[in-house]
Image (cartoon, rainbow, N blue to C red; front, side, top):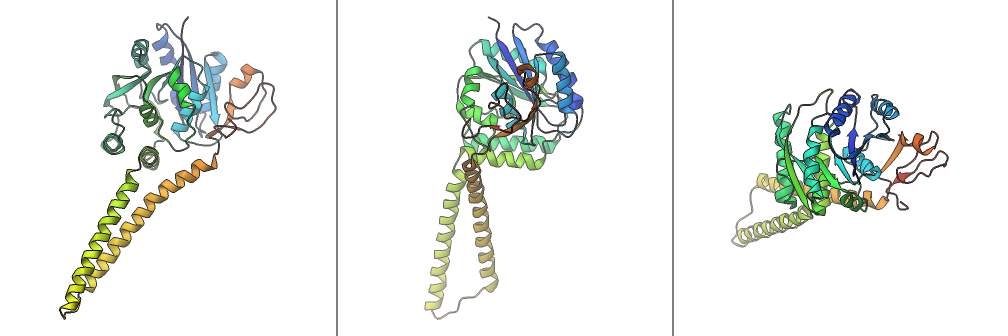
Length: 340
């Protein structure tokens, strides 16, 4: 039996790249002994991204499109696509052609040899600024050395193949603030890797802003380690010890008949301690906010439109992935809600 491969692509304002990506996918997989489907998740783009994919889907039933009701981030879009994947394995790659589809046959070779997770590890990164590369290296250093996910590729990997077993296991997680790549690495399974050169972007500009990168870094740390909280205890203990020593010195001066001096130094101490306290409150607040966010149990995403409706006979609707039933009327629902 020929296996089915699901290719999941999150897209945000990628209308100019999708037709070229579709053609390269067809060329890359024409000699592979697999059937395939292409799942594009439009992360509420402001351009014609969904329209382009819908047009491709009308001409090729292997193409499936989903449009999220709000911009939710690429990792949530990836989750949406994986929840919809029907294949025996799924490949996740970018829509901007920085991840060459021609690498997919190499991933399939490792998968057929028994690997359940196959990473496409960056060997070089073309068209990237020094700041982007430096921030990427810092992120992966923190994940490997500080957070403790040592199996994460040192040079980074967000292009991968995962087996159906891993896809099904991933569906059990309902976390709202997460790094998909870090989570898959943490999950384990049999993992392998191939190397490739990350190419320059074909058209347009990346929507992966510095703010989004910082949020991903914070999400990744808070989701996988309690070390910042432990460090807060260490810093607090060290600060308290320093305070006790300073109090002992001041008491000794007073008992010897002298008078404590140093109004300026006292203000410095107060400001430093106050700054440390505010910093630690900020770290604690990040953890508390994420705990609150998870406790709300909101759907991970809402789907505004999908080309699958035409296949199931359902008319125009707004529905949530994994919740809609054939023949149902218009409604709004979500995947990952408590009832899902």
